[in-house]
Length: 88
Image (cartoon, rainbow, N blue to C red; front, side):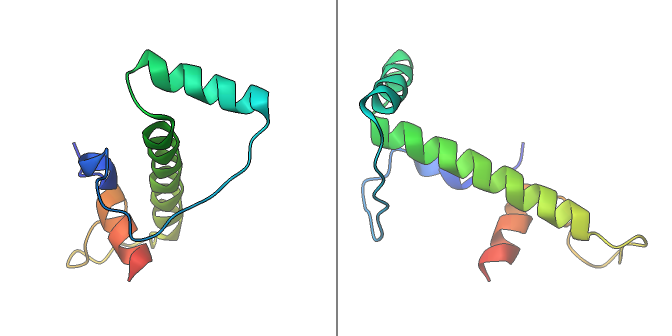
């Protein structure tokens, strides 16, 4: 299984933050789902956002893969490498 940036959840140190607004109904749905697995709303939302980000980065890297791959280049289909590549 490939590595994930979610491996350290729940995070204990926050350098950046994201603020978002939800309706009462949206928050209730998220809160109930988080409670089902014993997570906080923050951990649940962060995990969902990271899941989506990793999937999108993986799909983008796979779409950018040349038709004749360079055998010495790292595998762009590897989600962890796709994430690292995107962040550099």
